[in-house]
Image (cartoon, rainbow, N blue to C red):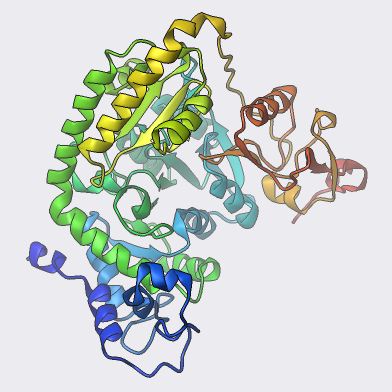
Length: 497
């Protein structure tokens, strides 16, 4: 029976057995199962080091599993309604890059929303694929980009019937989903593959009250960060596939090209046990979590100066569905920004939020979240309201204007083009040779091959002044642009990089 199979943790069980046999280690890693004393060993214990082995006999090989890893991956696929699963120890970043590289070749088009993660841009550079960006639904009141509408996808397909694939985010960082089932059917009807970023949706697979999953929608392939919302160790993720459209030989080859040949056994074991826990406990514990979250939202709604962003709000703004394990709160009516709230929460109340934007903050809940955690969040907001709400009219209203730049050339061409560095304010109307993004969540303001507009410059200035982490290749106020004077493509010649 399925339940009997799901009780198994084949990789973790074998790893634990190996850690207990007191083997004489002449293989790597160099700590030799914890024989080198250090501060970390003293803190976390010898048992952890004894589990940190590197594919000894009987523990299988991640690059081509035939034993306990293969069995663990089969159990993961079964638990997630997929046909196949691939364990990842380099995070969903390598999953997304692998998905795109395995399905889209150089100069083939891929339709995708503009609010994609930076890993997608890396995949475009490595694969040479041409992005066809579609505008996500914009919430001007909150200053965020949400999902994509069915109509916008249909229009993109109509304009680009030769596109190879469609890329969907399920859910966005703030928990908003698109009509993934309907979009998948449309894409398949037009001969296109469907790739899904489920970095923040691993928990969807374990409770019927959660939004629709990629595998339920019969999408071809998805990447899911089990470490973000399903309890495995940081950097452990999974690729899931369904149907016969994916070339698994190419996919495996691509993953092996990108992923470490020395994967962490601890990360693999954490995937194995997280799957079992979520399979047997996920439904009940997510139900309990949703009840706690709604109770907290009910109190938060009564606090002056903050606005709780819930499912009703998202649906009223045209969203398709909402992940209610995300607590999104508009704080700007307090007269302070989300960035300020983020810092105050950590310094004064010892609360670590996931993310801040100009108007809002995000708290991510999982089955590991406790009532005490939510009580602390409520208390902190009550205190903030008492201090700041009366000052709300003293700060100017925060401006938000979502746009994305015009594409001049595909990211791969820009990446390989000759480059020069200029001060940010001298980059107006130049072609970017790098991605510049705010982290988290890692959504680029401009990518290689796009024209740097004044809006992009102003946005970067805004985030820098607010103390956000701006990721770029240079950290001295300079940016990389294409040296058009020495670029063959600028002179009108074909560039086949």
